[in-house]
Amino acid sequence: MQLAKRIFTREFKIKVCEEIESKLKTQAEIIREHSLASSLISGWIREYRQDPTGCFMGKGNNRYPVNRRTSEELKIKELEAALGRATYELSVAKEANALLKKVLMERRFTK
Image (cartoon, rainbow, N blue to C red):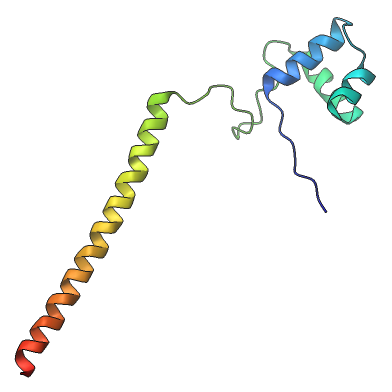
């Protein structure tokens, strides 16, 4: 059985690195506390030491979202989805109406 891959936020990674760098906790304590691999922590610390303010920004694929979507963007996405559903339902209703008209016309001429 494969375990689900955990994704850690930028804030969590920075907090872990700051705790280790400021000697509040040892790397071993962090590993035990959060069940992390030592190689993972080592990579985080290496990246943090290179650029403490710009670290963990991701690789350009928005895997680690830094900017959360605003409520307006979420509302727009929600409305666009609702519009798509309504458009689809309207097209189905139009097809059903055309089919019903066709059936009714056939019945009129067959009597």
